[in-house]
Length: 152
Image (cartoon, rainbow, N blue to C red; front, side, top):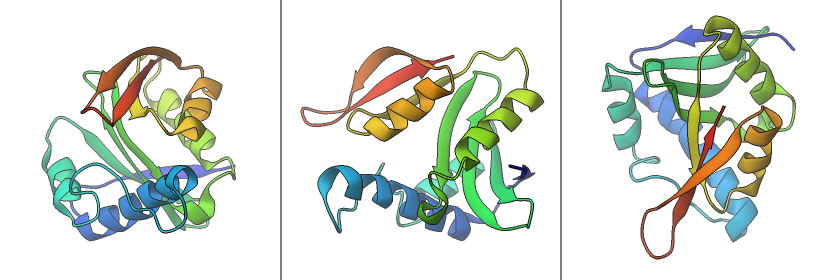
């Protein structure tokens, strides 16, 4: 599968659409039909604007070779941190995430990476483990929510 990444600086509306779709898709898997859940500000544009204004991260739209926009990726190159990796729900389970990660490793070889994903999101855990990440810890947010940390 051929994908390509396009660096972005603005486009908060599109980033918000992609984040909302991806996070709510994940929430529905674990919490049931109609569930909406994600990090604060993910669905109202607040998070997208914050991410796009952060000078320490590189933000990319993910496109298929036919120029179809399928996702969004935000990475902190200096610290080796994968901040957001969102694929639109109608493109999940088509190899796009794996192809995208291969492209990141091609662009940034020899890099050590970390990612944080919700504790409930077992699908994400399996995906990162398939890519070679290992679970290294847990980060509690409050009495009901936590995230797992992975490293490669």
